[in-house]
Image (cartoon, rainbow, N blue to C red):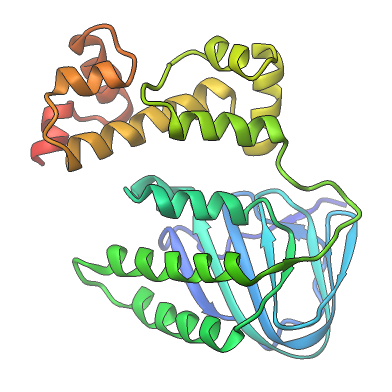
Length: 271
């Protein structure tokens, strides 16, 4: 039997936040391969199976579903809560490094107990209202509320132990940390493999397991995102931006940036 793959966004946007549907009680095993999903329940009982592990629903609780994880519900009493669905595009369009770090920390969880749920509920209510609006500041407001929600969650949660190992490999976490914290990004899988005391082949394997893409692609996506931040939020000359991103000359950086964004760095900065 084929595993059902659901897409709750259906190309209508890159983020969705809404109340958890009370009609959802028992579902067949299925997975989502296009987005990261957070399910918050402050009422309800039953079980939630993720991959091969069964979690007892004990509200208030949060579940974190990475892409391609198999899961199903068996909810026995009316559930109340919220669902956040984040597509990769949402993070790619965000210039907020702190939000990305918070999401990375949460994605390393599976199921957690939540404290101060009244405050969590209030932030969710505001988020549901804001994602419906269409204003020039919508992304900024939503990102700010998400940061408040995720930070508050991380300061109060108690992880629920799982019998399966769904945490991201420590090498991958260290790899991301190097990318985020090194003053100069190196466009070289070999460079980071050496720093992590592993081989390029193993680093590629670990990245594919964690994200579905090779280490070189992880580095490339990070370079483009960091280039956008430097171009938008600093007055650095483009030659200096190129240097910080490990490009030997500006023309190479210009070609690389345009190949990935269909704009030159100057066009992006002045657009």
